[in-house]
Amino acid sequence: MHSISITTRRRNELVDITSQVAELVNKSGISSGSCILYVPHTTAGVTINESYDPDVAADIIAALNRLVPAGADYQHTEGNADAHIKSVLVGCSLTIPVENGQLALGRWQGIFFCEFDGPRQRRCLVQLLGNKNKPQEE
Image (cartoon, rainbow, N blue to C red; front, side, top):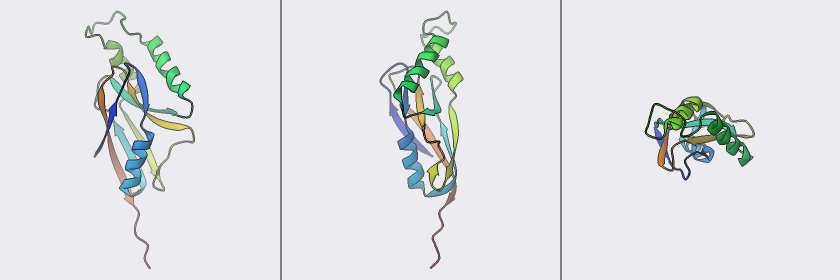
């Protein structure tokens, strides 16, 4: 099990963690298998979406804020009820195939840690399952 440390800077933001996850896969030596990501926080999540254009992440945050506004009439009165609901909508785990030692992401896809109650210090757990490259016989 690996852990990626994430420092968020805003109450709501999507942080691209693709390179950190890809580095763990690369260092593991796994040639094929699965990469499982899990966020152990109730006001955060993890998702895959376009990472090329940062406006996509901004649009996702804006849409979630319209759908689940902060300060609405929630029964949970700690001031972060919207963050809990956004976390449920996005989800807290992903499974990504590993093929030929690489994450099997599409051309424009990236992995995003989703912060809904920041700024905070967070983590994303990464479990790698699969077959390692076997040395070639000479």
